[in-house]
Structures are given as C-alpha cells and as structure tokens.
Image (cartoon, rainbow, N blue to C red; front, side, top):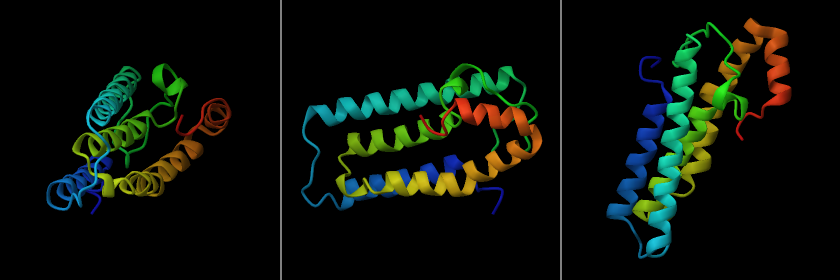
Length: 149
C-alpha cells in the first residue's frame, strides 16, 4: 500500500469521482455560466503555481518531496515562509477548481474529505518526523508559519 499511498493518487481518485458525478449524475445542478469556469481556472492555475514553487524550493534545498521519506533539510524559505504545506494547498485548489469547472456541484464535499485524508495520512506524520529531527527549529517554524495558509 505504501507504494501507491501518495497525495497525487488520492487527488486523482477524488477527481475521477468528481468527473464521474458531473458526467453521469449532474442532477440538473450548476454553479452558473461563466464565473464558475473562470474561478475554477484560477484555482487550478493557482494550485499548480503553488506546487511548482514548493517543488522548486525543495529541490533548491536538496530535500525530498516524497511524503513517506525522511527530509534532509527543513525548508522554511520561499513559499514555505507562507504555508507549511503549499503542495497540499495546491492539491486542494486543483480539486476545488476542477469541481467548479466541471460543474460537479454534488462533489463539493470531496474538498473537505480530501483535506482530512491528506492531513491524517500525510501532514501529521510528516510534521511528527520533522519535529523529531529538527526539534527547536521546527518549533520556531510552526510558531511563525501556519499549517495551511
């Protein structure tokens, strides 16, 4: 299970459910004409930018982006000075954006469910590993930077 237990797999599963709901069970519901497409596009674009900035910063600091691996360095610069989990925030924005774009109204509950799964399966264990390895530095970082935004 560890081989496939990665946030992109969970994101993909949520996107498949949302797309299936929008395609096969729309129930006549809609977010509206143009604004949902525009907002959805902004969310997806913003999410992808956040993810790219985080990957860049992690590569620059020579540490892993793989959730189940031990980090070599505590990254606190760049986008990580604004959020401790910008990749996961980006994932949530991509999910919410595509739900809006696809008009998958009934799939909106997937956003908090996905966030809960990511927090329980990835964020809390990652933070516990960082807390054990970087102790005081991680504690100071947590005081300055919020978990999400």
